[in-house]
Image (cartoon, rainbow, N blue to C red; front, side, top):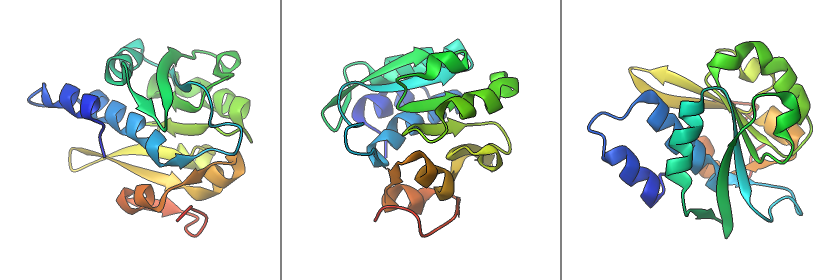
Length: 171
C-alpha cells in the first residue's frame, strides 16, 4: 500500500519507528479516499496537529509525490483555525486536549480525520491507528466518513482491523 518514496524512506531504517509507519499509512490513505466533486482539485494538503517530528517525517515522504495528479503538501495545523484547506487532518496524541475543537472545525467537511488517540472513532474521527502485537494497524468509522462527504475504497476497508458502520463504503 506504500508509495515508492514512502517505502524507500521506511526501508532505509532497519527498524522503522511507529511514527514512520503511521506516516506511510497516512500518505497512502489519500489514495483510497474519494473526495466529493469539486474538492479533488489543487494540492492535496495533509495537516498535522501534534508533533512537529510527525510533520517533518511526512514532508520527507511526500516530497515530489502526487496522488491522482494532485501534488501533496504537509503543514502544521496546531489550532482549529489552522485546519482550513486541509484534505487530511492528523490529530496526534500530544494534542489530545484539542481533539474536540479540531474535529468540530472540520465537522461535515470533506476532510479525512486520522489519529492515534484512543477512542478517536467514538469522538467522530474517521481512522484511528492502533498498535496490535507491536504492529501499526487501523480501524475505520464509515458513519463519520459518510458524514464528512468522503468515500473510502473497499481496498482500504479490507486491511482495516475493524470497520464501524460497514456497508457505507465505496466499492
